[in-house]
Amino acid sequence: MSRIARSISRRLYHPNALEHQAKFPLFPLTYGSDSLQYKVLNNTLKNHVPEHGFNERAIVASLNELELGSSVLSALGSDNSPSFLNVAPSVLELVKFHLVTKRYAITQELDSELANSDTATYNAPALKTLFQRRLELNKPVAPHLSQLLSILSIPGEFLVKSALPELHRLSDDMVYYSNETDSPDFAWYSKRVAISSAFVSSELFMAQDKSPDYGQTFEFAAEKLDRVTRLGQYYTNTEEYLWYTLLMSINLAKSQLTRC
Amino acid sequence: MAFTELLKNSGKLTSSLKVSLSKPLIGYRCVRALHSTSNLGVQEENLETTHFGSRTVPKSEKEKLVGTVFSSVASKYDVMNDVMSMGVHRLWKDHFINKLDAGKRPNSKEPLHFIDVAGGSGDIAFGLLDHAEHKFHDKESDMHIVDINADMLKEGEKRAMNQGKYFNDPRVKFLVQNGETLDEIESNSKDVYTVSFGIRNFTNIQAGLNTAYRVLKPGGIFYCLEFSKVNNPIVDTVYQQWSKVLPVMGSLVANDYDSYQYLVESIQKFPEPETFKGMIEKAGFQSAGYEPLTFGVCAIHWGIKT
Image 1: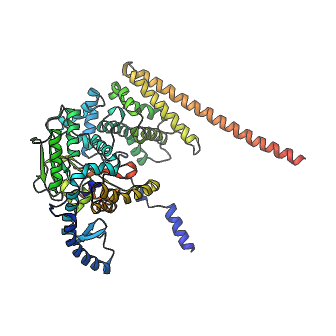
Image 2 (image 1 turned 180 degrees about the horizontal axis):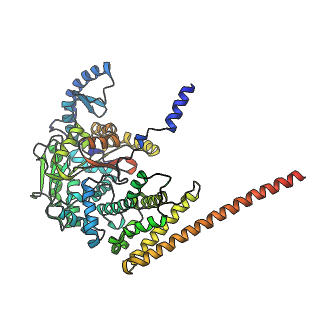
Image 3 (image 1 turned 120 degrees about the vertical axis):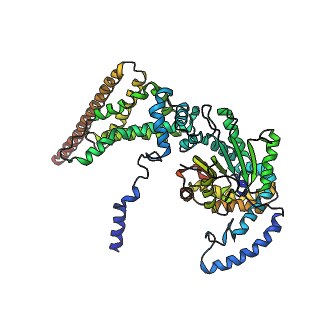
């Protein structure tokens, strides 16, 4: 009997690692970097989005360059449904591709650094560095950022299934790969939400930024992050104070009780 | 549910349902007797037998049986679809077409070559061409409408004639073909392969998928609308009750109980979405996926040939 219990508990607590192996290296994209979709979307994003923006014209221009037919557009968009205001599924995939590949780009080098170096001596970059690195990657598409953000914020399936989870993964990655201390309580959530909102507001700022090389955007982002950090400190201090007060009150009550 | 759609894809048949059923039943009993010694045998796919609804029949007979079913429902096809799905099948088809979003874009060079398999009634085929025309001003892409059942194809032609569009049009060809082989369709010749409520009636579904892979060009897409499994237990209870009513409605509206009974049973026999996705991948397609519609009453499946 105990043997069965032990084997069940082993099964529950030590599941087979292979069962959870991600099928696609660029999750949540359903294709790898050697696929047709990757080739087309990568070429679109690099060579045609800066000119045409996030729309079908950019993808068609890329398909013409690669000498592929219109059917590839259907193939690209197969994972998405058309959203409100008639954004084509293939364009949604382009947007998703942009978000996912840029997110992987900021951590790719860090991953190999982390693997090669000794954990004791490894110096993780600051959160601010990663944050700025991600904004740097937006520079080529900056003139089309307002278009991108409007596609991302249309209420609907895409917002719930792709845009918001991707934003959360971005802030989660930034915390994980930076030297930021992470806490296993409710602050885990509030920290990610704060960073996400800081990132979105920086992107909104960048969309209208006319300063040379987007200098003002980076100033804005730094200030925004500072505020998030300060807010975090306020939060920690308040929490500590409340906890202290609670314990104090209990002790006070206890001491009063022993007296009578 | 567009239950009548289940009935598509079949051999030529001229006889009425009752007459043609009498013969295969004899064969079916023998097969059933053989199976009872070994296994349940209903889902078992060996060389000799397959399922026709809840019955096990010799594989050679299924094509003919499905043919009988579709020939007998062909004329009432549209009315029954609307009655049985309460009109929802129009939404599914509309979503299917919008999601596929196919058509030659104004700046593209090559027109598209569509093939709609088991598409006798033509609603998906005409819908796709209309979408391409209205959205992308594409008047060049061509379409093969393929069905194994000549009666169903005639329904499609009749519809084309009535709407005054796509009849005697060089872009649209109606062909009687078996979806499992597509003998007259060249390999690597099609951009978009669609099959809606048809693949369920193939005797060998895997062979149909392999053929889809064969006829598609690299970069082409396989797109399938089919009944699926309802995953919500409450909705499923309602759905199961509804399924029981369907044959009765079939006998009232179309005077044909047996055909609609087959529809319901063939839906229950169709593989789970995950299994079907595995079959699509097995045929060689990449990035296969599916989207359940209306709690999984039906689902859109896709795969890409690269």
